[in-house]
Length: 154
Ligand code: FES
Ligand code: FES
Image 1 (cartoon, rainbow, N blue to C red):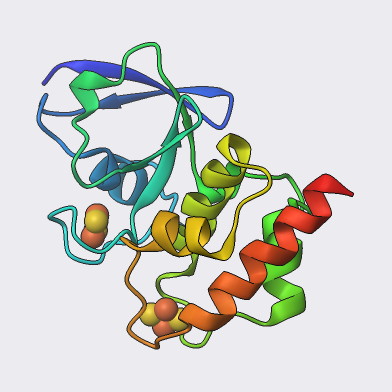
Image 2: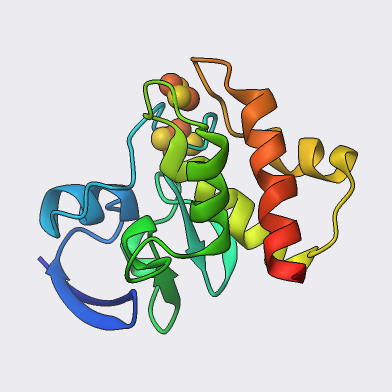
């Protein structure tokens, strides 16, 4: 099997994999980075969201052979100690219910706020729209993104 080098959270990792192995599989099964969740496996739920060069992307749809030279950030690398403004806002608003979707929500929100630091509530709803929450924590998610934006602007 070929070997691929992936740069994840600033660290270079080598894995042996078939070219079409999804990044999500590599993260969870080969590298034991299980903060990124498997929801649908077909790009429909957002549970597996990571950042690729700063942009939110679904790791279930990315193949390891496509990622040479890309900066991959997972929930484990968003901040060393959970102090990212989005993580802080999430705690203050007490967003999670079961928690399963939450790392994907946080990764989508954090990439979004880098691109749009002063969003309207409509912008937030539109940006977060593709991340499904079975527990319907959508109102708290929206409020937490508002709070995170305030923290980033402060
Ligand atoms: Fe990737 Fe659902 S697991 S979008
Ligand atoms: Fe349970 Fe979102 S908190 S799926």
